[in-house]
Length: 137
Image 1 (spheres, rainbow, N blue to C red):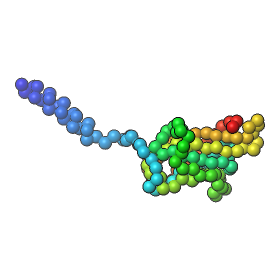
Image 2 (image 1 turned 120 degrees about the horizontal axis):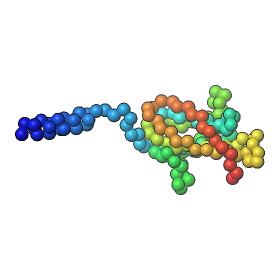
Image 3 (image 1 turned 60 degrees about the horizontal axis):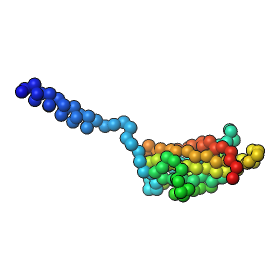
Image 4 (image 1 turned 90 degrees about the horizontal axis):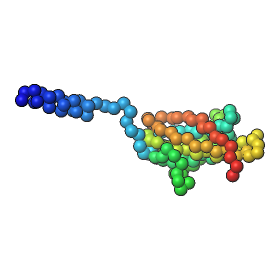
């Protein structure tokens, strides 16, 4: 009987210790307005920054929305000599970005687009260079 009680105690103790253990990679969900995160997106195609375009953001998503509706957008502007779209006052969470733009040196189509999922683990300023590819609208 003592052996069974000790075994049961050891099993319960193992569960208690594991339950108290802080996991290093918590699951990040959500995302949206209301925090201190800033994300700066710079669209890039084959080593050239795209200075004419728009960047769209979907909160709480890692893929493009099926209905094509995004939560916010910003046009690409030159800031400190670099083209960026800036999203401010975001919270920790997951985001999906879509960029569209124009790259005059491309043939047959000068239009570019691309998507990028991003996870903000802490509220800070993140700068992302986002690759985009050619498309024909």
